[in-house]
Length: 212
Ligand code: ATP
Ligand code: PRP
Image (cartoon, rainbow, N blue to C red; front, side, top):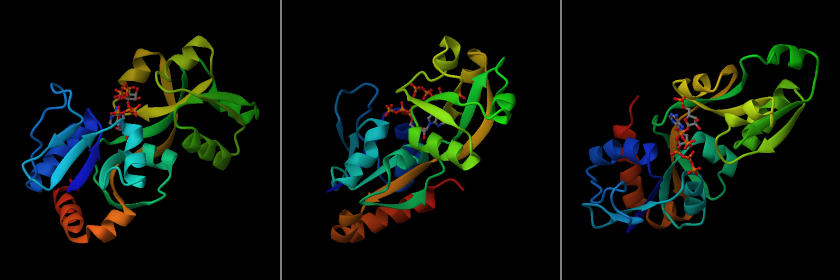
């Protein structure tokens, strides 16, 4: 049996066409079913539904043989015990620094002021500001980062941006792009040795189906 870890929502939805191209159809709909282990039309493949940020943990410890996770989540978690064979080019967005539209970020940086930055992505943010030589106090949040500059909790946020609608709706502006993000296929290193043939077939099928 091969176990694939996916998170509900955009990763599940954007992975489905890739699975389909590989001849694999998931038999349950996670939006209507409460099941966490989903069967597929292939007796040797099952899908487990986990939180997006738990996908690397499942793959690292072998709770799943492979999984799909954002580059953001993989950098934050690290790649211990995993092999990252493919950029699937799905769930594309960017990681950016954003501030209130009335905050002069350039001036704050120029003055060398210490700025407060709220984010869920502390590793990525720490690396980014350290590379730029900007002094920051990082505040860890688990969601709704956009609220932090509006309430005075922070001067800036580091968050994911796609259309920019969330920033705009909250009177925030993007001031720096940190990195491009897309989702990656990750594989448990031990499983790749023990289940080499079926996993290789699956990786190759994902590779052929990946949008260029
Ligand atoms: P968790 O449930 O663990 O807190 P989450 O709520 O961030 O995670 P999703 O919103 O499903 O989970 O996001 C999964 C991945 O999709 C993210 O890690 C990121 O790589 C990508 N992503 C997030 N937001 C967007 C977006 N607006 N557009 C495109 N891709 C996105
Ligand atoms: C993500 C991210 C931003 C938003 C950006 O949230 O955390 O808030 O998308 O997208 P936009 O630029 O197109 O507005 P998501 O919609 O996944 O909700 P979540 O915070 O519940 O994960």
